[in-house]
Amino acid sequence: MSDISCLLVSTGGVRNLRLQLLQITNFWPIWQVVASVNIALIEKELLRGNELARKMGKPGIIAFPVLLAIGAITGYLTYTYFTAAIPQEGIVNSPYRKNLTISTANQSSKTSVHVDESKFSKVVTIRISQGASVQGSQNYDPDSTSAQSGALIKWVNDDSTLHTVTSGKDPSDTDKGKQFDSGYLKPNDQYSVPAANIGKGEHMYFCQLHPYMTGKITVQ
Picture 1 (cartoon, rainbow, N blue to C red):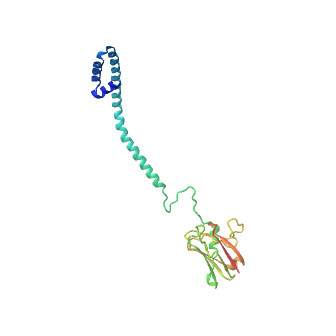
Picture 2: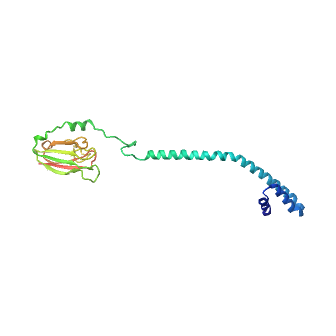
Picture 3: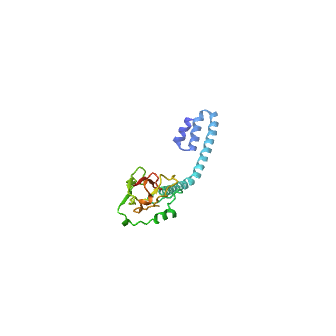
């Protein structure tokens, strides 16, 4: 078979292969028959291979641009959807997002208390610090203070988000908000309540939106 392979490569044609094989086997007549049969099989397989190559030519030409188009579409869709998935400042698209709404109860408790500061000789100011919504940061400043019963206690929201000033230890306190409740304080909003309305003693308060924010006011 190695001689046949060499001849196939050197001549480059089946007809020349037939002639050379017959010359090689001329000294062995019995092998001429075998060589003829083998050559016939080779011719048949080569013709089948040529026909297959012609059939595969057009699909190959068509497949290349189709693959290019599929690649381009895949790249475009990948870029589009990945770009859409990048978080953007100020835009929150989440099925779990719930916008805060000011309830009627909290709003009424805030607006129903109107205090004329000019009637009080002493005003104790407590500020809600910038960044107070971040747990671990300073929140009410000062977080513990005292006031005389004739003074006015005022809270000012210096933060950039909503907060509340609600009497009680935490959200689970059954008496929360009974002594005072600012409702939702927007940035720069303030809430005032006379110390006499709160009553003497130590009074805890917290932010309903950020329960880890706590403070204490002592009325003397």
